[in-house]
Each structure stands twice: as structure tokens, then as C-alpha cells.
Length: 110
Length: 116
Image (cartoon, rainbow over all chains, first blue to last red; front, side):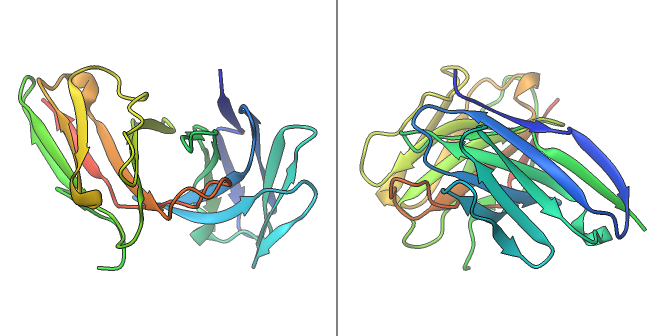
């Protein structure tokens, strides 16, 4: 059965800390992995990863895929209170149905 | 508007009633998804429309759930004879057509459904 698992489920850090969020997957015919940030309502797209070992970066956020380990990490450096959100990982199957993990809830304390 | 629009934003109804949730995707997006998000849970896939193809209904939890997409644009998710376990946020997303990699989805703000 295809599935996506994220860890940790929740995380509380202080401003300025660096965090690493994990996503592992078991999806037939893997093609890509996507990260989303969900604050109050709509998830917003962060990254799409297709190739192993190539880091995608946007400001203080970066992500990398490891196809050998069937996993991806999302790093956030110098965290700010505005980074507080649920971070979702998703992997599409061959039918373009997306499997989402349960998310990691990040809380950044001032 | 430029984004995915969902209505209503909140819906409270009594157990046993039917509800209709609406999604207006981004213009030009041929793919449309419905998801359900329960408290503390991830997104649960419900149904997927791609252009004029038959929808992928494999995620619908029971035959009380149905969805249609008229004219390849607006979609309606209908829940008949609602039950308390149907209470959740229903999210709609749209994306450009299937490319083989999985296009990033653009989400609406969701409809928060509460069944009394």
C-alpha cells in the first residue's frame, strides 16, 4: 500500500534555531515529492523534488531528496515565528493521485 | 479571482441532511482534486478530475459522497445523509494538466463542515 510518513509529528523550537523535518515514502513508480506549508487554511507550495541529491533552496528553507533512502528532508535555518505552521509532504502515484503525510506541526517560540 | 475559490467557507448542518460544497478552480487548470482534512490528520484524497476523462473516485469513503465537474471548470462535492464523522475541512485544489511529474497544486481555503 502506498504511503507517506512524516516525522516528527510536532516540534517546538525557539527563534533562531534550525529544524529538520523528515518525509519517507513508499509509492509505486516514484516520480516526485512535494513540500507544502499550511498555516491557517490553504496549503501553499514550497518545493518539488525529482532528482536525488540536488538541493532546492528558497531563502532560509531548503530541501533535498534521497531516492536510495526513499526520503526527503526539509531544513529551516534561523527560524522565525512566521515559520510556525504545519509542513506537509506529498508524493503522486502514476495516476496523479497525491498521497499526503499527516504533516509536522512546527511552533516557533519568540 | 486568481486563486482557487471554495464556498461556503463554513457549513453547519444537522445529521442526516445533504450538503453541497463548491470549488471554482484557477482558470486553465485542467486537474481538480478534493481532499478531506480531519483535526490533526493529513489530507485524505477523495476524488480527482483531469480534463474530460472519467474521474478517479477511489478515495470516496462511501456512496454517500459524490462529485461532479461541469464544463471542465467548477466542481461540486455532495455529501448525502451526513453523519457526524463527516465533520472536517474539505479542501479543493487545482493544477495544470498531468505532466508525468505531478504538478504543484494550488489549494483553496477549504470549507469547514460541522455536523451536529
